[in-house]
Image (cartoon, rainbow, N blue to C red; front, side, top):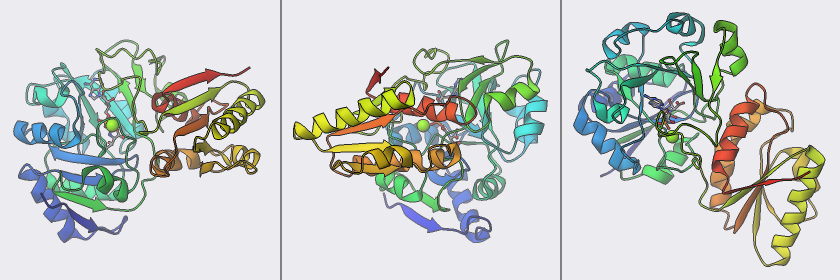
Length: 348
Ligand code: TXA
Ligand code: MG
């Protein structure tokens, strides 16, 4: 299959390009497109054959459910059996945006989409290209992140090309995504609602609307409720070791490990904030810079590109330090780094 890459203006995508991509989706094709979080791989959500094709293209296990994307709140009613308490107020506050709600599935949604679950994940994205495409397609679009299974999510069209060239019909290139990590996933079918995946809609923001929110932790995620939340995920191919603990201790442990690995003849890559990078400037490591130490937004935008960069930098190991914070967007960063890590070392 030839994959066509179409460049569009992020804010004013050419309507002809969007119409062509929308037609491709309506006919059961696979189209990658930018959302504000990461690139998604879209498919007509009510077309079972197309959905099966998508699982093949990504090499994604069939037990990992997809998020259904729509343009308007009004398109949700036929996809669910009920709107739980709080759904409307969360939608009014956070949609369009990086929030996914788990709702009770209507039978119109194929079980292929939900991996057999009686619930369905729904999101209205905010990115202008995604909005234009969903409006033109006028069908619900199931879209996982547009990477091969277990690889870091794509934040640039070039990442999609890397993973899926020749396996999908079309890639709409709208530049780098805004947030850089996937949407917050909130399960509204349990009480209290449970956050299954942290993202840019933070726990603090959800608590503004909800009296109480449960949190599924990265390593103990209930994999039968959300099979996609496997502990190891989003990973570079090269094994990554994550250093936890107080800043000074974790930094020291990382620097020591880097020196030791180099002495042993290994090539070392480090995912580092600028502060950490300065401590490493006398050591021959390959650094993927996440930016200023206290800039969670910048680090989120850079994270997956950094992991992919080191994957192709011909290193034998990747080292990273856990962010010293866990509030706001740091929560999502911690979660993704933990999932990407093959080993976690606690320094103290
Ligand atoms: O930001 C995002 O959410 C991106 C963009 C493209 O929208 N999409 C994305 O999709 O990250 P994906 O497939 O990579 O991740 C979807 C997550 C998985 O962890 C999956 O297990 C969970 O959502 N999920 C989907 N349906 C679910 C359901 N019915 N119940 C619980 N979890 C569900
Ligand atoms: Mg994914």
